Image 1: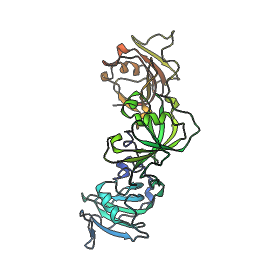
Image 2: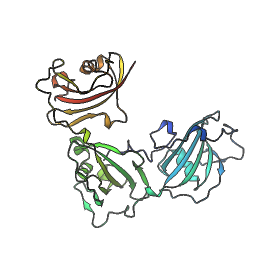
Image 3: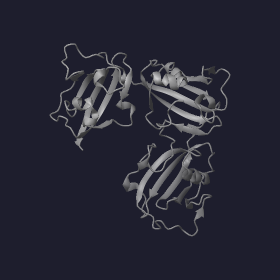
Image 4: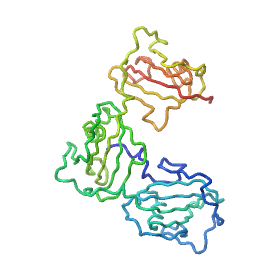
Length: 371
């Protein structure tokens, strides 16, 4: 099954914006309401949820309770035991697919209502406003069953074209950016990437082996294409049937292999099995043993051009400590400078045991600091 659950930002359970990767809108400090006077004191007239959470209603509802399968827009204000605000955020959450705490409280609320809740650890006070149903995440009308004109894949899933894009078709070993939204076949939303910048995925041999369904679909989707897939539980080894909407938004061509996968014939090796070629004007700050550096690095197999490593596929750039544990990369990095972009070619015999191929890498040193 497509490994997208780790990168979805829109509908993941929220605890606080400072501690999660949930898409949030931060309110400036001068716009935050004043500290409440009752701090951690629970009023005697407080209500109690079935699980025992104490809460009071600050603002009455203006609408009805949202459906259980809905995605809702919610505003949070969180205070510590002294009443000091520690976080404020706005997010879109699935009503039934949240943390037990939020699932419990949201199930008691109606549209427009604001409540103050004393958390289970009694070290946090939550002020939660249920702003409304976000209908853009509603399940499509055909979520329960694939239509008669849907195509069937070799894996046993059904799919249909929603909109055909006009861009390029991706090739094997390219990196794509896409968005996905997933529902249960009963209409409850599970997760979505739409509030994020999208998901990066490498269309390599490993994906073809582990998830042939999505590998084959993406290779047949021009950029801009939107498809819907009905996936039985046994196909993705899950517990329920799911429906996915996939939008292919971009091919990350900057991660395509360079033309010069082998070092230039006239380039002298830095040392045995290592060739180094600067591609920018270096600063006067040469990297040193013991420094922690941030690098943007992309590496390919020299023979086939297959992508094997890319900082862009990570949440952040590489961070590494220049030390003996880096092996041959210590020798490479101590010849580079802060801000320098360079190419390096490495023979298999200088790489760690188990790597049986030559590789070429494109590297930029972003910054460095002492340990």
